[in-house]
Length: 183
Image 1 (cartoon, rainbow, N blue to C red):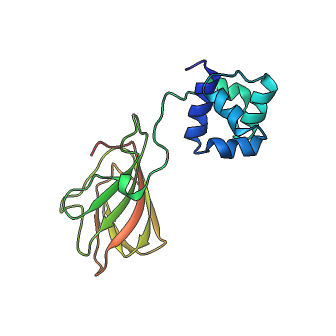
Image 2 (image 1 turned 60 degrees about the vertical axis):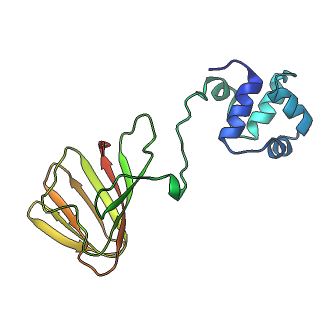
Image 3 (image 1 turned 180 degrees about the vertical axis):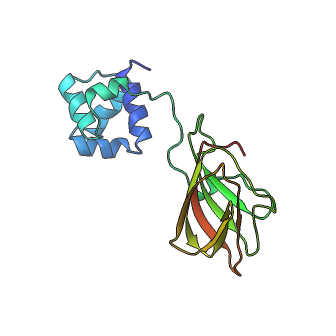
């Protein structure tokens, strides 16, 4: 953690996606004063710092204890989602670049007739999902059902399971599984 107020302020402002001009306008401090603080050329008074931090918003205590060095990506554009699929099925994993993940959150696309394979799969954990468009046939143990848009599922993944698109159109669904698997 850096003890330099200016460096911490610039890192926090950037992390929150706020421009210097916008922050200056929000807190009523001149743009030039804010720039000088961030450059470490001026030390703000406690009341000025509180005024600036209130505009972000963050408390003074959190400002000095927040870990700004660890910068796991928080937001992702569509082209930043890693494709973990093999074969026809596309698994777009959110947060693949995170140092540690507790879950696998994915956008899955099954072209017409595509499936996860003839063999049922099983692994420790849980999985849930909701169909966005198209149809997906999910077999869990001896139970099988075709789900459409808006329908959802939740099951223990230690039970053998498989997914298949029986429709004529692609199926898209959003799923979440624990623990995060290495694909």
